[in-house]
Each structure stands twice: as structure tokens, then as C-alpha cells.
Image (cartoon, rainbow, N blue to C red; front, side, top):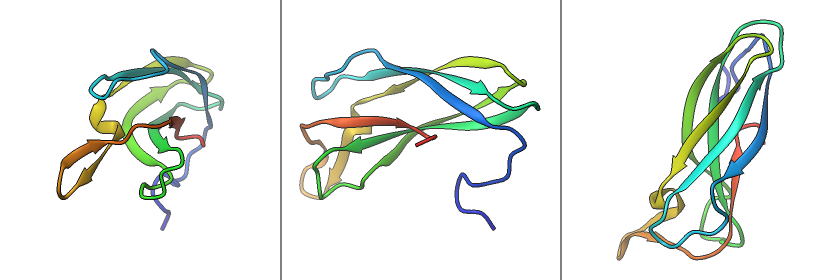
Length: 114
């Protein structure tokens, strides 16, 4: 009845303070990403917080790719700091000839509210 992540909810959520632990990575390094998730409504709710990787200027890649998700339960007005790790595979693509390959370039990290 509803597309993925478009189910009904009786509350709203805000993503704040998206903070990566670094701004540049070597090919096999991981990135830790933290953000605050806040219940902006008046009832208890659960959010599937999603993290997308969006490669810039790479026409052979999707516009954005879902890489991590975590379910968070919040009381009305409550906020929690959420932390996820994006390993090298989160920035990779599969090549039939080479296996998993990471393309150099710029990647944007997007929370599910985008």
C-alpha cells in the first residue's frame, strides 16, 4: 500500500548535527558518523534512521545508495545520539572483472530525511 519507508506515523522526527569523524578517507578506511535524532511530535514513536551514500559526478553509480539503518525508539521530545560506521564497502561497487572496487572521488552522506 505504501512505498518503502512511507508508512504511517503519528509523530515526526528531526535529524540534527550530522557529524562525520573525518572528511577524507584512504581506500580501506572506515568512517564513523554521528547525528542526533529527535522526536518532534507528542507521542512515542520509532524511526528507522537511514544513512545514504551519494557519489558525486559518477554516472555509472546510482544517485544515492542505502548503506546503513538502525531502528530508534523515542519518547515525545526525546533526542538520542545515533552513531553508525561506514566501512570501505559502503563506498564500493561490484565489478565483474575486479570484484569490489572503490572509486576515488567525492561522496555525500545523507540521512533518511533528505
